[in-house]
Length: 173
View 1 (cartoon, rainbow, N blue to C red):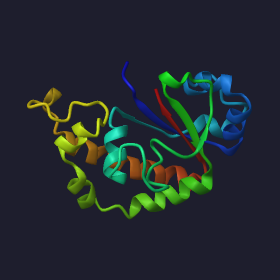
View 2: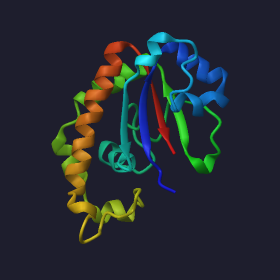
View 3: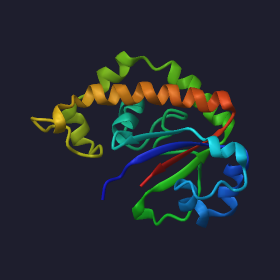
View 4: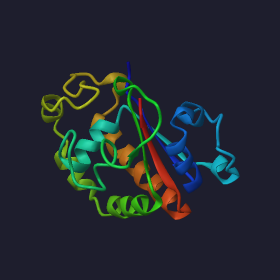
């Protein structure tokens, strides 16, 4: 099973509703539930697919640790939703934490990410999806350039969510 990551803005009302009604997470993610919040219907969403773990490593230098807020892809926030542990996670970050994340991402030099990228290290650290040392990348995609591209989009996305004053849902599954 692929473990893909989607990030989505949520209003504060939706964030609180997800805490109170975790069984409705799936419907929320499938745009079938907005918890009666019209503002929430105009959500922002970013799909970073399988790049989440590589980005985690480039941002923190670790597979599963790191310092907040840059470790947000695998840690932090508040667990929401009824997801069996082997099927992924869903965590939500309040607006103040999203603002801190957006500010922190602005300060990350692309050069630092490039320096941390080492296919042998990513493979040794078991960074998902575990195909870092393949001689011929799928679809002739340079893995480093793909991660950098996702990082640029992630920085824009979190800045836009922070500007709206919204919370952020991180779903890996």
